[in-house]
Amino acid sequence: MSFQDEFNIIERIAGSGTVTGAGIAEPLPVRYELMIREGVHPSEGEPARKMTGKIWSTDEPFLAARLLSRELILNLADGRAWDFQFVHRNGEVATRGATLEVSLHSS
Image 1 (cartoon, one colour):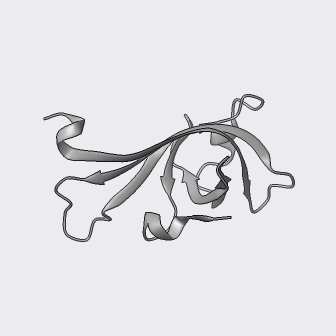
Image 2 (cartoon, rainbow, N blue to C red; image 1 turned 30 degrees about the horizontal axis):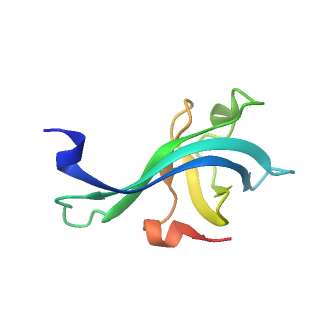
């Protein structure tokens, strides 16, 4: 079974933005590669849509490790904002909040 058999890719988002959150004095410049995907056969109680991907800093190589599990906001280049948290020190991220519809919003 392949990735395409399990998920439909709704949107791919890549670009430059900033990260803000509690304890961050100035917005941090970052790059991101994200994907909004929807399960082909979603399980009971599982969110229909998920946003996954990576966020990294070209200036600070340990950004994700330093901010691991903190409540953060990514300000995307297109004007949207995404409530997220780093789930791995390699820059992998996950939605913070009940659903993608709640966590991805206009800034």
